[in-house]
Image 1 (cartoon, rainbow, N blue to C red):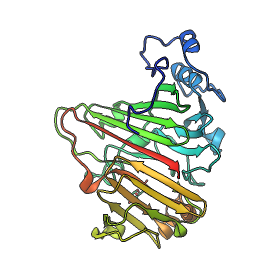
Image 2: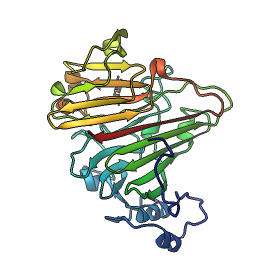
Image 3: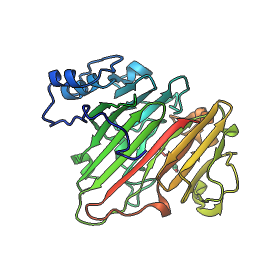
Length: 340
Ligand SMILES: O=P(O)(O)OC[C@H]1O[C@H](O)[C@H](O)[C@@H](O)[C@@H]1O
């Protein structure tokens, strides 16, 4: 589903922080209420809270939902009759998606921490505006996942889904890592399926290297028994141990140890089949990174032996599939997850 592909009701506009109609009276009379639970959080601005009030979106805090010490991270809960999702404002990072009557498609580590500035382990971190390590030693997977995004839109759509839009703009912290101006937006549509539509506008006056991925952690009962389909015949780069060897995938993929592979030029759709069901992955991105560290996870504090219960299939545009962004260039890609 493309960025603008959802059928929005004409009387339910996206709201912007500087929008002319940001009065609660106007909102009450024109927006359909889907609110399941309202929590006023001091961590969100008054305007953000008002957006949350009008479109089936509630605000919460990670400590309320996931426990743990300290202040935690502000979160959004998006819920309607078709499905329910949770995300942290930090990173615009999905941590849960449950279609009605189904199970959570996303894995959130039982050892996950919700700490400002540190990416949450699990869900869908956004790797942006680079994937993997950086040649100058800047943080892996870019800065988008570690910075706080702003809720700028909330809509109840005519088809019963709910869409929230989050935005990340430059700050002193991002300029230290990425000197150019940019506007990053993520539209998250929650229903029987989950769609993330990413838009990154490069506002610099010169070409820049660019790569990106939806680094999705899928919940599986046992990673050793999960079948990944939709990669047959694709060339993959095996990056385990820095090998960087290339070979074609033959048939269905089942992981049998530490795995870190970059599949290039993949078909639009993959499926993960387990005893629990089949998860469908669709995207207009070109790559799919498949990752599970297996026993190496024992050295990763927020994973440990829980590695058995996820597999990452990260749709994006990375390695050979990445393309630089020209001056003023825009990157727009989407990902849709559902139970098959
Ligand atoms: O620990 P992170 O920075 O979140 O990265 C986790 C993993 O992300 C991707 O899957 C990369 O291909 C892996 O090499 C990396 O280990």
